[in-house]
Amino acid sequence: VICRARVNRVFGTLLEVGVRVEAAAVGDADVRHILTGYLVVLAVCADDPGAHLQLAQVAPHTEEQRQQFAQAAKRHRLRRERQKLSACEPSKVTLAIDFDESLAQELCLANVQTLVYAANGESLRWETVRSSDEEPRKWQGQGGRGG
Image 1 (tube, rainbow, N blue to C red):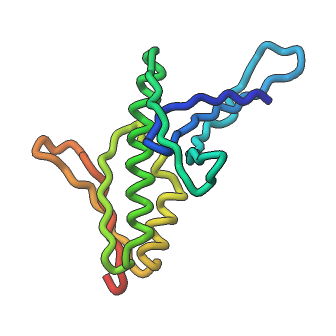
Image 2 (cartoon, rainbow, N blue to C red):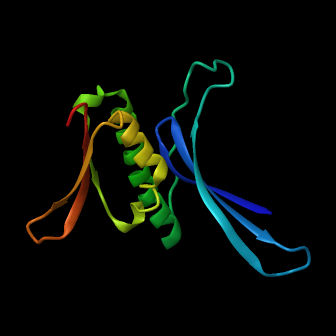
């Protein structure tokens, strides 16, 4: 098993670390991608664990790094939206997410479960919000007690 990790982006006191897990048989040059995950790490002061450290931003140099840098910002916004959602009164929940293909993996079962939980499982309505050119621009979910 091979694990590769890289800081994708810094968000003040938080940093997103992308982790790629690969597997290869001993003596075999053929490597298979197993999974990719993202860790969000909070930087704390060693002398005062209650104090958070402001971190310097990473600078992407390659095209791949620039893509990961941009996608990290999208994931960060999605995480913040989920945090706001979980803090809301379930009957007042409305969530709109700017959607593009790079977010497809982030809108997975765990996110849907969060939305269903916030809606108390009683009602959840999804709609595609279209722009004037009729291209889907956002997915919007709304939940609440009794509709």
